[in-house]
Image (cartoon, rainbow, N blue to C red):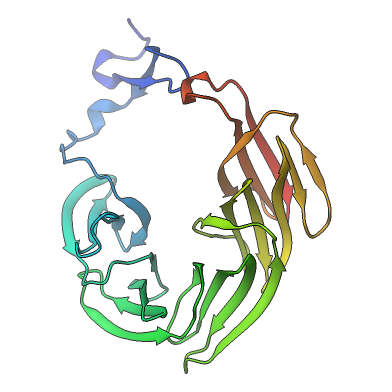
Length: 283
């Protein structure tokens, strides 16, 4: 296959279509001669948690062995090129939540003696400080974490969502947000939007849902109330996508003052999915 560009300036990228069996798309990649040869590295299976300086940070954890230390893959990227890969082992206990704070250090949260152990770690795994937060809960979600500015959490306890703040001195304030009446099985990482606004999603015994928290108050909480139907427990707005069960796959910030919800029809196999919904909502 030829292109009007010079062969020395053009390469081709093969992308497999995940929705269809054995079907690839071949796309042109211009300016390939201006790029250095890519250095091969071992596959990275960890979760991306953010950047520290020029390093992209990936977190790996063995969920089946609590005595095995968590690992970080630190990939240093300079001018678009991988310069260095560093593997760091974090001290036990394993991290149930791991984020990067404003000081470019790690904030690690683990269960300990009925409470939460909060640790600040350097990127090389060295412990800077720690404290135990006397908070019993079934699940928790870290919104922001700082020893100097305070820590914000969403706690799930007995079918209830609570907004929890931990002051620098350790004082804990808990505020009931809503009683759901359904068991929450998991709660996903939050995305910070503008100001003090956070967006997060969850799964419960009958489906899934998402919520918007602004200034410590729930402004939206959409939850499945039927196949393809979501109802906002705050405003009573109903989103009806038909009678087909759907899966909530992603939440992302959109244009200013908006966010986008991505859903797809539930199917036996991913390659048989034929309908994807993109809903843009105003905050």
